Image (cartoon, rainbow, N blue to C red; front, top):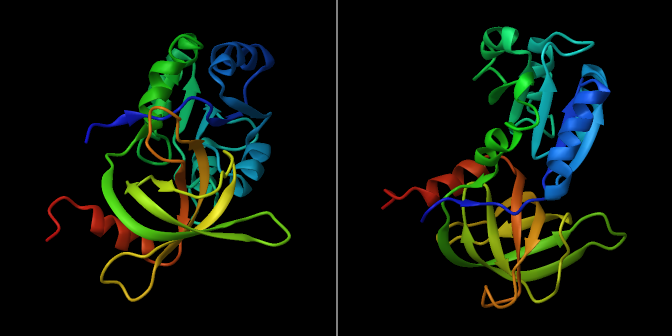
Length: 236
């Protein structure tokens, strides 16, 4: 199946930019529905990124208050909420080569400061692509988090990818809701478990059932590898 773009309205963290640059980014991204959080320097950015998952990080290079190498290392630690989030280093053109050293070492892309804001969308859009999806109709169970009495709902997985899944649900679950999930895959003695966030509702008239799109945030133990193995096209 072809790769499809996600809805606009992503959560972005901007770290270490001067007020004027932040203003230019805000003018470019906010009209698209992106929700922007700012941190004035590296330490503040790390505190946010360690406990809250953002869809992408835009980080000034060099990072104020922390060497770029240390900042990237901390963001990618296993316990960090943003360990898998795309990260774009933004740096003056004459420092681009220095920043590109960190590609594959914590940084996902490098953007010249002189290209802000015009080049932002060209860099970010490929990072917000959904992985190819596989039709998979299996029983599932979700548990809505953040409530005094967690709400458990039985539902059905309609399709799934390495980044998320589409669920047919009997009740509306609003976007940004965090939840736990269980996928009851055929042939497994126990369900695949993990946590995710609702990123959109199915659209009436375009999709044939009430449902939610869930983006994966993490898995229990080796369950991510188990699911990935099931999604391989060459699996027999």
